[in-house]
Image (cartoon, rainbow, N blue to C red; front, side, top):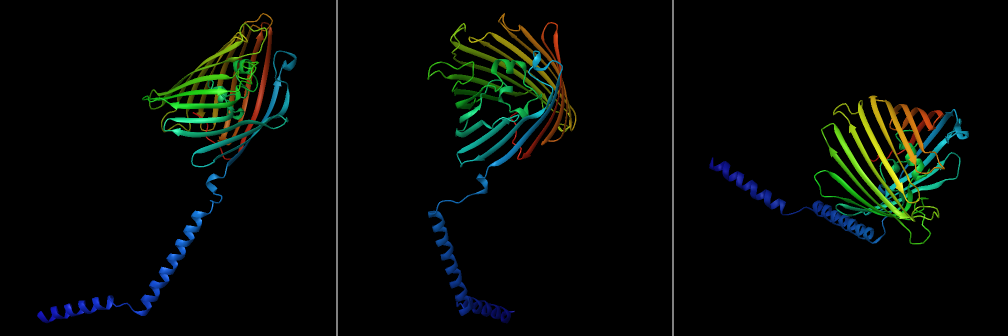
Length: 374
C-alpha cells in the first residue's frame, strides 16, 4: 500500500513539472493565437472609427394595396347620389414604413384614386420622447373619431359614412401638422391626443396665416369580460373659417364614438361581433350633424355579414334637410391579403326620391401587411 502511494505521488510531481514546461509546439500555438487576437482588435478599432453601413433592420417595409370597384346606381349622378354605374380602379395605395434610427420611425403613404395623379396621403415621423408620451409630425389623418383615421382599404364598408362625407369632405380631415399622444396613468387604457394642424379643410380654412386647427381626442378602452371590450371616444376641433355668410368666423366640430367588440377566447378566428356608432356635429361655417351605426358579424373563418344605418341633417333651407341610407354587405376574406365584398345601399335623400346601389369590390395587398389600429 505504501509502495503504491509513493508511485502515485511521483507521477503527480512529474506531470506537474511537464505541464509547467511548455514544448516548442505549444509555444508556437500560443504565439499564433496572440497574433490573431491583435488582428481582431485592430479590425474592431477600425470599424468603430468608420461610419456604419446599411443594415437590413432599417430597410423599409413596402406594401401595395389595390381596390377594384364595380358599381350600379339606379339614379347615379343624375339624382342625389355621387355613384355612377360602371367599373373602375377605386384606389391604389403604396406604403413605406421603417425605423429611421433607434429614436425615430417614419411612414410614407402614396395614393392614387381612380386614374388620377399620385398624391401624398400621409407622411409621418413618430418618436417616443418619454415612457407615456409620443410625438408625431407630418401629414396625417387627424385623430377625430374612429372612421376618419382609416385608409380606404380599411373601411368597414366600401364607402364612407354619409356624415363623414358631408361634414369632413371626400378627403376627410387630413392635415399637415404635429401632435402629442399621452397615455394616462389609469388602470385601463386611456389615451389623450392633442394635435396642432394647418387647417386646409374647408371647415377650418381661415383667412390669416396664423389661423390653425386645434384638435383634442380622448380614447378609452376597457375589458368588460375576457371576450368583450368597449371603447369610448370623444373628439373636439376648432379653428377659424373664411366663409363670409357663416354665422360665426370660428368653426366648432364635436364628435363621440362607441364601439363594442366580442371575440370568444379560442374561437376568435371563426366568430366575432362588432357594434360601432359615431356621432358628429358642426357649427359655425355650417350647422349640420349626423350619425352612423354599423354591425359586423363573422360567422365563419372567411365570411362576414354586415349592416349599417346612416343619418345626416343640415340646417339650411336651400339644401336637402335629411339624408338616410341603409346598407348590407357580404364579405369573403380568404386571407388577410385578399377580400371580396358585395354591398347594397338603399339611399333616401329626400321624400319620394330613392336610389338603389350595388357595389362589388376586390381588395388585395402585396408585400408587408401592417397591423391596423384596434
